[in-house]
Each structure stands twice: as C-alpha cells, then as structure tokens.
Amino acid sequence: MEYHIGTGDVVEISLWDISELSKEITVRPDGKISYPLIGEVDVYGLSISQLNDELTKRFSVYVRRPQVTVILKKFEGKSVFVLG
Image (cartoon, rainbow, N blue to C red; front, side, top):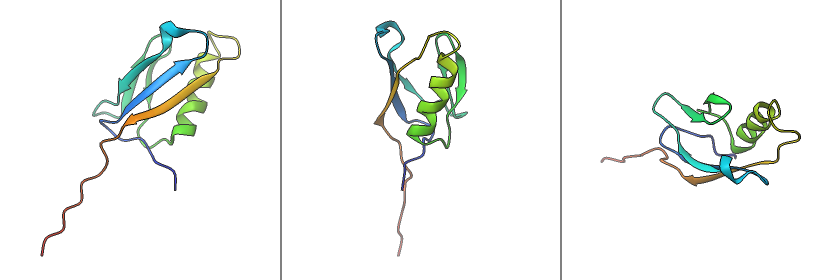
C-alpha cells in the first residue's frame, strides 16, 4: 500500500543539477504547496510517485528533461484513539 500525501506533511523536492530549486515544503491546510517557477500544486491525496510525475510534467515546460526527486521527510499521519 502506497502512502498518500496529507496536510501538514513535509516533502523534499529536488531537481538534479539545479540546487536553487531544491527545498523542503510543508503541505498547507488546503492540500497545496507553492513552488518557485511552477506556482501552486494540489498534492493532497497523491502518492509520492504521482507527485513526482506531476512535478516532472510541470518543470518540463521550463527545464529540458527535468530529473525530479520527491522524498517524504515528515508525515502528520492520522490519529487513532481507542476508548473503552
């Protein structure tokens, strides 16, 4: 089962050979991130591989054959309480 990105999660996004565009970003409460060059991206509910594909597509408008890496640095997860 693949993890799906949620609000409060922190992802590290890097582009090979373009260190200025590498950064850690926290997913906002509205499920989006803001990223230089490509603007806002709705990431809520995407898997890491889906986000990687989406970013690669968006960066390809500005960078020839972008090599994007997405790493989940911190996840907020879901809280479960058991009472009884």
